[in-house]
Image (tube, rainbow, N blue to C red; front, side):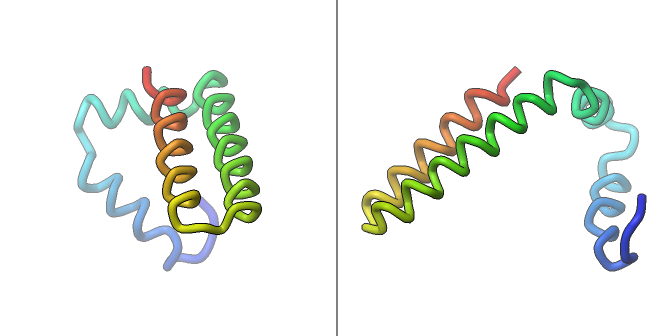
Length: 80
């Protein structure tokens, strides 16, 4: 890992807490696949569109609805 030591401590803490867990190791392997990266890029696009729509419709109800919709779509895309 590269970067400043203060920016690495959250990842190091998670790695330490989850070391030895089979599900975490499977997640780390799955995270490196091309399919996971493409799904993550799709989720980024969903959130970008939602952010642009939020700028266009800044009402509280509209923003909450867009956040919920983007969250639901992201979970639906990333679900295995």
